[in-house]
Length: 253
Picture 1 (cartoon, rainbow, N blue to C red):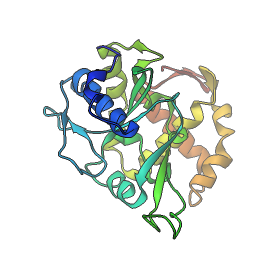
Picture 2: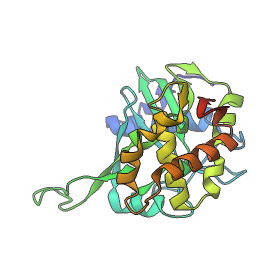
Picture 3: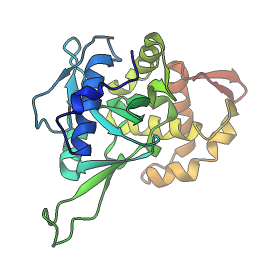
Picture 4: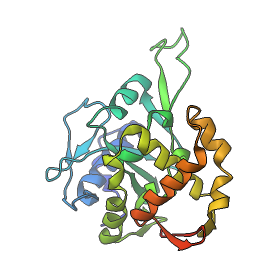
């Protein structure tokens, strides 16, 4: 994997957005791979495919690429709100690659697997003004603050290339979420995100401190502490955390 873009491809373009699109997509074609099965290269969809840019010919995973000449941000500007919501809720929703670059070199490149996405992460923007060319059009932002840190699988971090085995191991460890119902997955992700605020070693009472937060997200549940213990057991069984006994745990990520 090289971190340099092939800038010769941009010589016939004037628009900065077009140059960025051509260079980043070409870089992914030549350097990217499927984190699920390691297949490369990834294949690009035909133009105008909604919310998907590439797919893996081997396992058929789909991917959308978002790139930006800036530091990695937790709020990502995206396209049409309705289109994004429809795809996120579909059975064929894509995983998302996020790429940042500087001086035409990749600085960060990560994937957030599709099972970490929920409709709540897609934030509706205000409609365009009546004077705008696309008056009334509604865009969206992707709020990555709702993704547990484990769900951010870096292939390149701060210009350091992560080994393929490490990437695939992290990707595969969360695949159990795809087998959960939407409601069960929401609970697991909510508790998992709470754990990000705790130290490597933590205890049950520390997790209970998030009871009010979880209650606000799940107002119809009257057994919050029971659900917390249930989710900790699920994360323990999936080797995300380790149970040390007497209400004490250790993160394994």
